[in-house]
Image 1 (cartoon, helix red, strand yellow):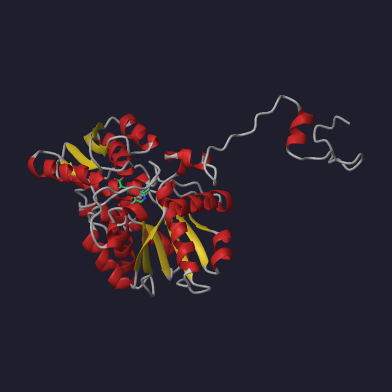
Image 2 (tube, rainbow, N blue to C red; image 1 turned 45 degrees about the horizontal axis):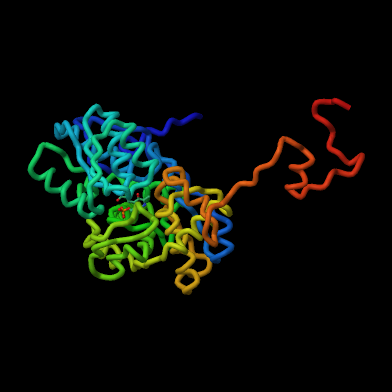
Length: 371
Ligand code: AN7
């Protein structure tokens, strides 16, 4: 029987603060695939699954939180919403606001967000301002504007965002029949790290899971305030989505780490890009660089002996590769990948491909029956 997925607010209405009074704004987010990753299981000796959040309506996990934040904003009578963003939050806020018929205002760091995300915010009719500063400056301004002007804040400092995002953990427990042993996840503001911990904890409390996984979160080395233990004033990484120097959910994330026996680690950009290539080429999942840090984190922790053989692990990959596709064209040793150009000539193309002609008489039957 065909089942139309109804979006996370309707699918999990019993576990979210959604009532008759909540006008549900949904684009059908959630219900994303949990994909077994044989290449990563072979490499690490663990039983590895990838939760592919890039297939959400706007191409990232942000949609789970945004359906909740925009629905609650409408319930409270908001006419406009505002967010600061490294790109994905702005794309999602713009799309859900457009669907709801309200205005989105988005503040992004000038020149530092991926083209796909910028295009989405503009396509969905957000008022987009490029701020001459970094993400942390944008968030501070968004918070101040929301405190003093009639615009509703939809960054993850708004608890509705975390509530919506926790549904990813519900889906994983449902798919596996229990929570995994370890969960790997990228960390920027640490809102999603906090949301998964909450989702898994609720599943254990209601008896749907026997455990809460150890939460392993990863920041880029040039942008790793939680790992360093202090804010980073000028964060730098090619993973622009997580170029955040002063995470909004820092305290909650430390609580979540302590409660789950978790861990925060830093990964340099070269390892992020190597993991990005491996996930594309060996697992068949195309993500943006920030998402590949989950894979890089798994490889690093496995090499460190911190992932017991046979343990069940889930990696969240947060955003689609088409958001920021240029990284796939980066050659491992530097420089651009240049696809080979060939003439319109079968023999020459076969030669370039290293193909030898079939022996006479061993050819497959011609389906067109030309013989
Ligand atoms: C692909 O869009 O902060 O730790 O403003 O886009 O919950 O912040 C994006 C964050 C991971 C980090 N992966 O999540 C924004 C923004 C991707 C992201 C994160 C982001 P949090």
